[in-house]
Image 1 (cartoon, rainbow, N blue to C red):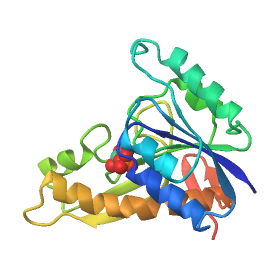
Image 2: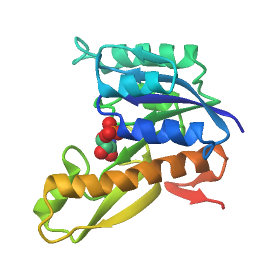
Image 3: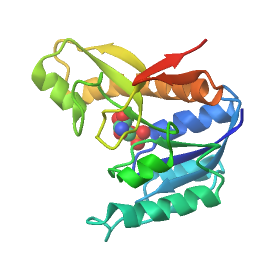
Length: 208
Ligand code: GRF
């Protein structure tokens, strides 16, 4: 199975780097990177795409605040033009800071994934690590999930737990979770492109 990856970013790009490294080092073998798309110009993620010599495109989202679908149509055009099709594509959100329209989500059935820095369904939305600390949980972590129209609510592919330590700050906890994200996301992508992931209702079944 050969999948073409489309990776959507907005900022720092550390997960993008982990994914590009995994493709380059052939940990993820059955995929090629079609395009990296950022909704913001000048962000570090774009320099990372350049470093790995993958195609990158900026589609500024300013001015589209009230019309998600108008913007998402531009995303689909660019993804499709770069081989990230409904059938053979896999769209990967890697710190993409926009909520996608229902139309976009439906365009990529079971081929649109995200990583979130908590053990979902706990602490969806923004500042998940801060929410976890404020709640006082002893364990948090990260989750790779398929995207559905409701934010951070889709079927869970993989999760990794991370202990919360006495004296943790938002920054120290985020750093420890992020290290796990960089392992978990490539692992999930590898399973998906190898065709080892299927759905049973809202449960994700993984064959090894
Ligand atoms: C990560 O914490 C990820 O879980 C969340 O956004 C952050 C992106 O970081 N969805 P980076 O841009 O990959 O460094």
